Length: 422
Length: 145
Image (cartoon, rainbow over all chains, first blue to last red; front, side, top):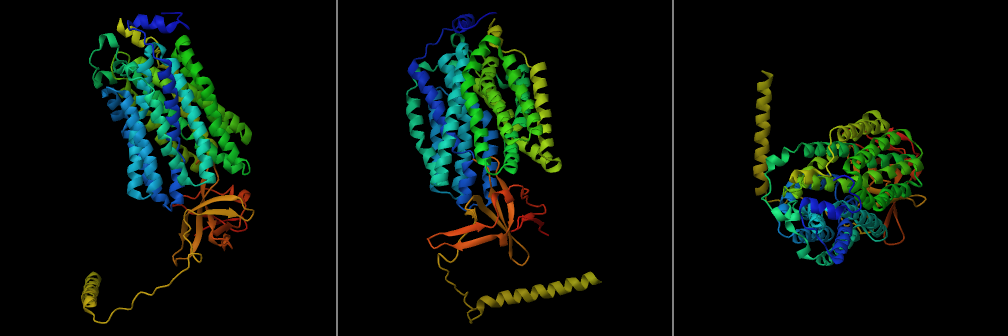
């Protein structure tokens, strides 16, 4: 097994006893652009919802209530969403239905900004996202198979971040020049190209067994939830991600408010750079991360990605020049590129042969969501009581814990599934 | 003893209220009709969600809430200020008297805040349930009792 490099796909697949999938270029490019348009559609739901509802004379309380409900649905829906994708025979149908539901939610926001409609649309969008994320990973795995999945996740991350960055810019401009409402019409309209490129994916090339993390020649029934939860590496990985997002989620918002307090004239431009800069780094690096993950293994890259986070926290706590802060924020792109590739890749490694790839994504997604949702509460409390520098220190300490867990306890997973087969 | 008297007093009060309530619907005299005032569409305007500008025509965010005191007088407006794409924006309380509602010659009302971006920038965030720091017209901070 040692020394597999650029030639790895054929060798590794032969090792696993699986036939090598040969997806067509048309399907692969279709997936690129589907990921791109999904990121576009999802971008409309980020920051624009609160602004739009404010312009529609909603009170802050109602906006907060809708956001909280959507957040809870997004958290609780992870596991059912993953299980749904594992149960589905066509990942393409699930992805199409989910993106259609999200586009429909955008249209509902734009047409009827009244409480029950918006609450339902926000919940539907959150629930559909829970299935859409795993569905894209499943389509990827079903198309290219385990041996080539690292680079494929890298490409997905590249197209997702280009999509997110571009559409944030375009929608920001729409909101500025036209109205906050126009953002949601644009979002709904993007559903059309998303569905068109999804049609380009050839159904017969997406092997559903492979997409669920089973090994096609010996497709056994999926393992039960209990034995899935007994996988030590999986629990460690979930704990790492919980700590990571507990440290990470509040960092950018906190830094944004520090930035707007220090610089007024350039604050908007600087925050724009803080949002777009890391996306560019992700777009540039993620395919490389995917390739190196096959060559070097997962551990060195995971450790590097986790190590960048405490460094970022410490620098935010100590650097005060606004322009340097933007430079520090570029570290977020490094971490982002690693995480975007390594999270689905590690899960694919650990679930190889289980038939539970997508359910496991849901489980790990729940851990991620838990960490991310407590992060602002923690950072906000520390920031209010002791000041923002201490909040950054606090986040950095959590990040160090995450780094410690990942470097001391997390095993190398590159060959996990293949060894398990023997 | 005192409790008993209080109880009786309450009972009497409740009985009186009940009688009043019972008599009112049967009252042949129509109770004074609510008065109707017509306000021109350019005379008044709803303000929650409205954009506000500084005197130098800088974007100062939007009004998201209005704070009133016990007598119903507006004391401060909460504005959602600064940031980009939802990152870095803060809710800041500004003195109601620092806001000027200018009926523009054109169709739209304009709301002008008598403060500059640089003056609003260092203000602390408004948090519900905590003492409110209100940014006054001269750019000074005054706590609202």
